[in-house]
Image 1: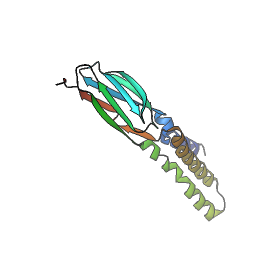
Image 2: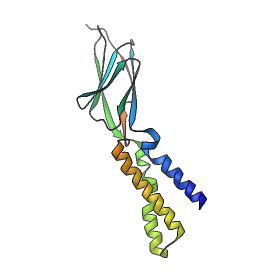
Image 3: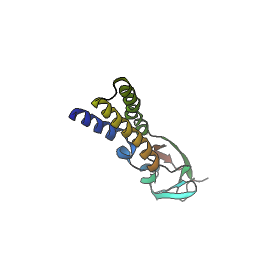
Image 4: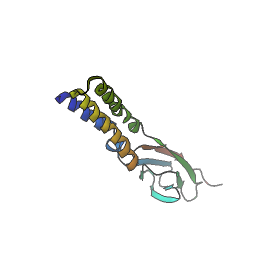
Length: 154
């Protein structure tokens, strides 16, 4: 029973995106030449800004993001950032499979101590899916490393 408990804890901790990488994401911005102003706007609001090389933090749930990199005497670069699903979010599905296994095992034998373990695993996976959705940790942005060359203005 102890090894089953450890397995359950391991599955829960390894699959929840909120635990593995948190609610916020760092976008690295570099420019040549360095010293440009990088500004991330998500859905029209300024989310973060800094001077390159910069590490800008935005919420993972932010959508409609783009980065403007500008420097006096140089042509401004605009980079669109796409939001997609994190692989860590999909890993919640593995422990969630414990729910159908639990229902199947209870249907066969009526009750079993192993069935309780499957139930706990399934509930933990389902909880991970919900928590990751609420916190926004289910998302990743791409690209998360941006490197641009700013050309002189003509």
